[in-house]
Image (cartoon, rainbow, N blue to C red; front, top):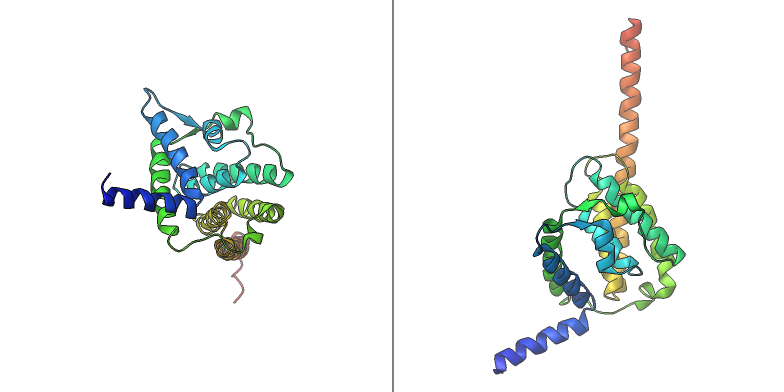
Length: 231
């Protein structure tokens, strides 16, 4: 092997050692590529959980959070939020992940997920240059119940029926999970901050919607009764 080839192989090995998430994502991408090459290939929520592993709660939450960043038909983002909520509850209770038969059979866009994971593989290699195992107290087993509660809260926020309100909380949750998988406590804190911002934005948006609905209700009431609205 040439020196250049040895250097590339050495760099790849160092990346894998430095960023534990890299081999995890690589394995799932390889499985998705094999699945996509099959005739009549399809992917369900249960299939994705099987690839992830029934006890890989953090990885599953990250994948569903990333999927929740994608646009979809009505109800799609709500279902992704439900998936995150269910996995987070399993994580909090320390139980293997599982979906009901109906939810487990829900189809997922195989080609989109494959491209998403391929892009994620590139991102985590880039993140390896600035990320490192640090502040491990925020990524160890003792922190998991706390992070599970945060994931539950952000999953509930993602259920809010407000357009685009899922983007910031989902991004924050994905960063938290990426930090846990890479044992990077600073990334976990950054994800928590992003998630908190998304929660505040969502709450303000919901409050404004209620205020607007109340004001419109008053206007309609005055119009129906034939009175002029108050100045």
